[in-house]
Image (cartoon, rainbow, N blue to C red; front, side, top):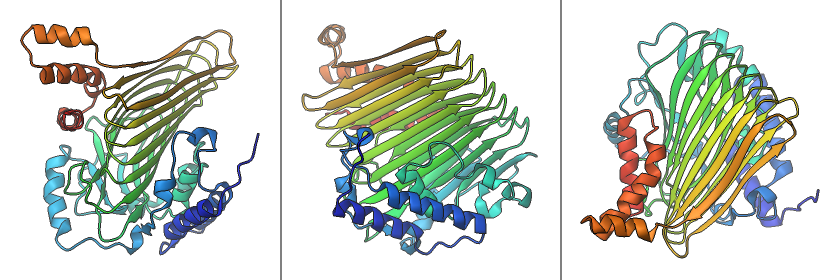
Length: 449
């Protein structure tokens, strides 16, 4: 293994980000301060990823490193912004249970968590009851996969988090909405949202995690650049079920890096529907560790990029026990000069006999200068498994366009119908019709060239 030596500019960029992350946030718990200090040491050791690193070779972070971000602790909301947000979020969120964070800060005014059933907690760290707070060190920043540099950067500045805690056998039918809102000002801002979901044995919930920019459509470019560095940890106990939707539709000149770290105990079921449409440069690292027999993991993703956007999805599913199931479908639509990256790894250990794993990445390029880099990856040590993987890169079929036009449809409508059909396989799985409708409108805007 060859060690990469960071340049002075790369070192200064990560040092700046770390300084802003820890500035002005001092936790009261000694264990949390130690956790932050350890994470800061990891950030300094690893440094800023570059295209010389295999996992980042298609994603150049130089544009991010060049921006002098300030920590959200130094940011104040413009006058009148909160009132506008209240009105907009009531329209945006169609569920009665939601947590809202504005530039990484919990907003009690915008959240709605009244009338929770026994055994369910939804709130931020400050609201945790003592019996749950005492258990935090078991879970918070204790997940495999959270030691990479941007997850460690988030932990280094950790002072608050969105927390969903489901007690044993607690099943929640109504989706829980986590809304992370970015508000831009005169200076570029760094925000670091954190989410912890603990689903104890036999519990079940649907969680919608959404990242947006306030008061504007995703394609607004007149905003200041901002950087959202998000981490979500989800723990599923035995026979627990979590249906997780993750939506990223930030402003077009923003930067978004997210980590989702999932641990599944025996017989648990985890599903993720991921939709990415925003940000100048975005990256999502999804890591799932199956830690018991009979776990089920279902991953569905849709990335839609245009202009000169770059969207990078890296997933890593590790199976260590028998009778595991993984089904992954990742779709990408690329317009203009945009660039989509997918690297999906499924590792089947020797002990993970009778595993059933499938992985497929399908890409649709709508322009001559769009680019796709895809690498579905199976690593199998076990010898009694059923595993498949593949990738396709295609354009709209001329015969299909001709068929639709021969039935009286104009070229634009024919094109949009085919694009909707490609994306609809993912969007129709979303837990809320209003959310699917909103994202369909985003898709129509992105691909209406």
